[in-house]
Amino acid sequence: MIYSLVLENMQRVFLNVQAYEKEFARKQMDCYTEEKRKELATKRRELNKIKKRISEIDDLILKIYEDNVSHKISDERFEVFSKRYETEQQELKAKIPELEAYLSAETDKTESLQKFIAKVKKVTSPTELTPELVNEFIEKIVVSSPHYLDGRI
Image (cartoon, rainbow, N blue to C red; front, top):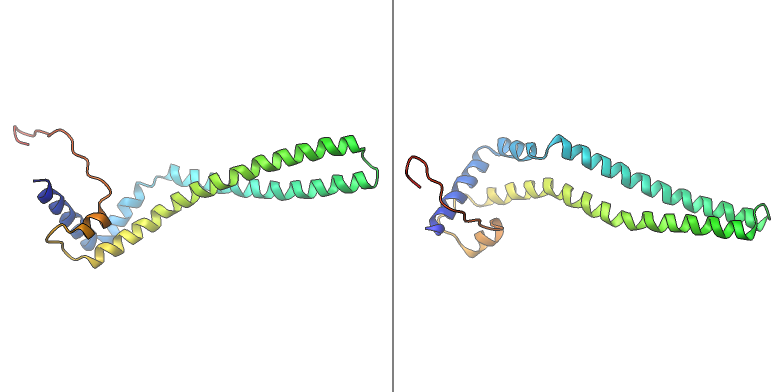
């Protein structure tokens, strides 16, 4: 029973993707809301801002070092400034991998859709569920309680 339902659904999806590729891609990308696009743009700006600030801190550390060497600031002041800048820089550097991973994962969704469509084009119409098909196209199968419509399942 489940075997035939899964096969039918795969055939239906494959046929839909092959016949209406552009419409299918558009519908999938519509799920990628404007809000998500704005969030990605915000994260990209944040990442660029962090990288810029890290570079600025390097320049500031160099400047206070030069000021210390030329006795424009005391050793104590240099130590306070340098610790503060180094702490801020370490905190910013710790945020970079997290932001890059998030941006990479979200960008991969578009690429994944393109890869999915390309894979579907290779498989014309599956007549049986092979382990390769299942592993390639099915991440999980969710079975829920039956839904009745007009007294029928």
